Image (cartoon, rainbow, N blue to C red):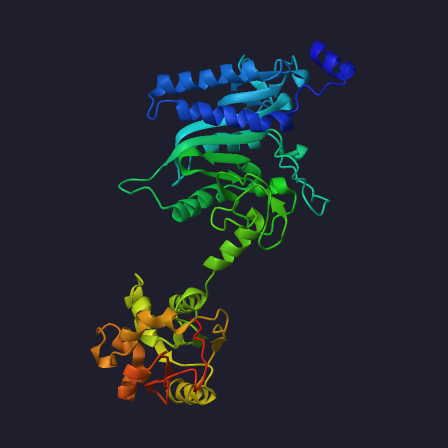
Length: 452
């Protein structure tokens, strides 16, 4: 029995505690790569990797071995050469598995590290292909479902499942934007990054991929021991939370930060993000969205329009709503299917007229989204900046906006001289009409305008 194995056995010391040392290994490697020349030639890049090997050898306990080259399994199958191999000397064998002296036995390997200056998002990426060759050296071992209601977050040191070893970690300084393409925005990059990784089967992916200049990393979702549902992306945004935070949805505490939803855990964030991108063919459908001027209502209406539906939105500020929708980049592709109807849902008669108008013009309603609600109380002055534009006649509006206000154009009422005396103005539909609410002086009727 090797001397190091005997020492570990009888002293009771855990000499190769990779769970304890992994965060420090990652930090050391990240610091070294960031300090390396930005565009090194082959010799400089190899020198940087050798420097990292030397630093790891000096930092880790003597029970760890540091090497590089291919990894070989008991059947004699070999991986592509790996930049850095961290292995457990107490488990190393003296078997002459190959004639290649640099080959490392899979049985003793703890972590395989691979470096690249630019991740190839269009694929295949050489660093990920190297990790695939390592993962293929042994059959994929299913990670059991974790039997715990809440993860341990008292420490950042993860207790990684033994089925995941050897761990595969890729470090990329940046990524290759592609021929003639600029660097992607954050969300677009994360989408392309996720598409690259999920192109590999779960058992062939690296366990971690760090894209340093993007401050983004991938963590294989199987490490959570939840069982995969099919929506997991595994992309997180750096830096992690300083202290474990409760997820906005499931309330589970986590250090990791989803790449799009900063206040959700990665699992809930992935589910919500995938749902956000889902769509369906709604051509021929008629939808009504109340309170569709901005925020959630506008997002819902745009989603329906881009899926092919004809959409009517209601709002107390139809001119402003038309201006907002016209600012969308793809406005021309769906503008003919959008109608904006001025409506105050506090007026029962106005609701009845709106219902009759929809029945007359569309004949049916397939989708109803009741988004409008009375939530935050606002003083009349809050909406003062909208008044001048809303008081304009429909025919005075920009030509691109007029087709959106079909009901208003078909039978508009003239704006009366009351406008100069109105303290708080609001617009409603009056049988396909755009009319003014009378002056809302405190002696007549207290009114608190609400959005949208």
